[in-house]
Length: 309
Image (cartoon, rainbow, N blue to C red):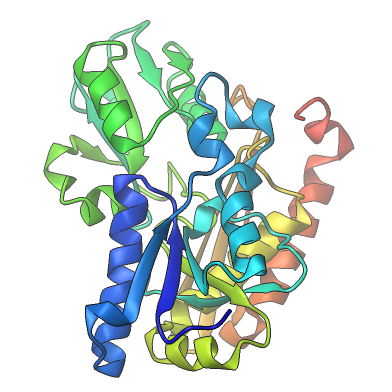
């Protein structure tokens, strides 16, 4: 049932709540509305509950969105706020990504205890990460160190790091900035050698298709350049059938009416890597991303993807 209050669905982690609060603040500023015009509804997802195994074994990216999308479809909430990199390329029927907030820093941040830089970790050091992309990139750069699966929200991972369970871990710099934790970063990893996940650093808002009231509210806070970049990256991911089971990186940059894209796919051990560059009109973002995905898939060959899932 539609109410005057816009109900914002989100996960309950500190980072998810920070993203929901940022969305609410932007809507308040854009429309001169009071905080009381919005209700933040916390929804626990399967991804939050499952902590004992990698997401790739539990069901992939949809674990962080399924329950929230069910609430959106049923009308319990009006919009859902997500980290774009958590979003599957296929959405449930009736839903769409209707706005992207301006993108934050796309880089990965290393937080080291044994050494401040990934390259300076001692031989045999243990690094924790829950991302197959980060795991593969670490193995590519430092095949001599051990990489272990490191689940949990930002605070949980930092606690495990402080307890000495690992010598270092990696987190998205954008998330740390949103939590006012950028001061703990010991190294920002360069995009050219440690490319980000598609969608990294961008908050997206999901809504019901045809919900005119909600679309009118979201219109002023959407960032066009971010939306174009994400259209390219998500099309690249879709062409590769990307999920949490596949180490895939992709980053699109918009400069005026031009777009430049770089994509990377790796085997989980980091030993085989394929990279691709593409550019063109920003208006053709989705086509550029899809074409890059098809070309890199053909270049890698069918054997490259064997056994990943």
